[in-house]
Length: 447
Image (cartoon, rainbow, N blue to C red; front, side):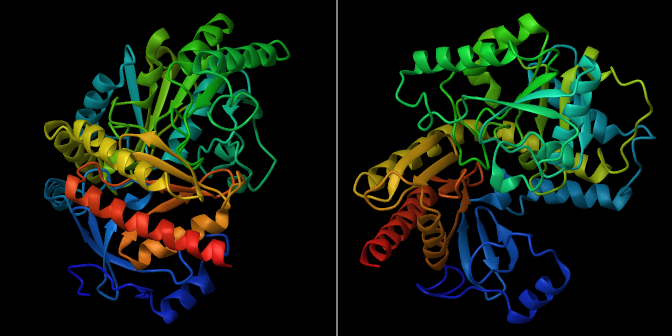
């Protein structure tokens, strides 16, 4: 098939052997590449990308939930080009109009009263900063985190990550205690009703706090990203907040993957748990830059201003990335991409659940908006199957669809297209994923 219609079934779509060999020679062995034959993506437009062989793919992963609006969005590329033509870099030592403009917009949208915004270059750095603020404010290095969580690759972020597959060391500057609640359909409370589940998790939290003193903060993803798009019942973190407030413990909502309307129902993931108010700190990254390196922290002024030492950011708040973020956020709001995520995402989840109903390797289709997880198991079992996930990811690529993987065992598909996804593209992607799932099931059952 032509580049305009996607790769033919069985097309390799792989980067040249020379480029792969060069990659292996100079980059770390632990730097993950998707696919047995990794592909080199050269350009994109809308919800599609092309590889070096000219094959076109429908992108249902968006550079790990980073291409939030669309590839090569004219409004963003124009803003970047215009700002780059004026000045590329200044640092936070100088006043920056683009940084103030974007900070004002984000502070107003955050829901946090008297909000202050600090910009970073990534979600990892944003979470690292939030942990610094919380521990300094509370004068404690004790952190509560959720089981199955992921918060980045820095030394401190790895120290609060509850997923062994993404935690290469047990050393940490923090003392981390892990709480139940992030995974609804597995674990000791899976069989309970939502209300009973929340009660059990709150009781676990109370018990844990009874054995500690002076915890600084709870950090939690409203929907666990790398964990496979798992989520608790709505209201869990509101119930946690009631307990945390009694102890003076801060709540950090990690919105690196859930922010900006991706879940459809809410602009921020924490809003599904808003019964006791907003978080004390909110971290963001990925989608706001639409591919540019933008991250940040929003916090109550009292918390943000608690640092007593000097600090700057050389690259956080760069004029070019701020211009990109402002243009991207403006486009998202003016085109109601949150509403589109709710409508088209609901259709996509419905289609995938219909497909899954006839397949033995699909345990669960979960998620909300355009943040959808498909958990895979061995045929006829309840055991997570990373092999099934690998087979489906490869089969989807062969048919012209890019999806990601995640989950504690690496057995969940991660489906997260740009928020401008059309109904037609959702239908096409669901059809390709259905074929890939059936092909993987046939291979597993026949082998």
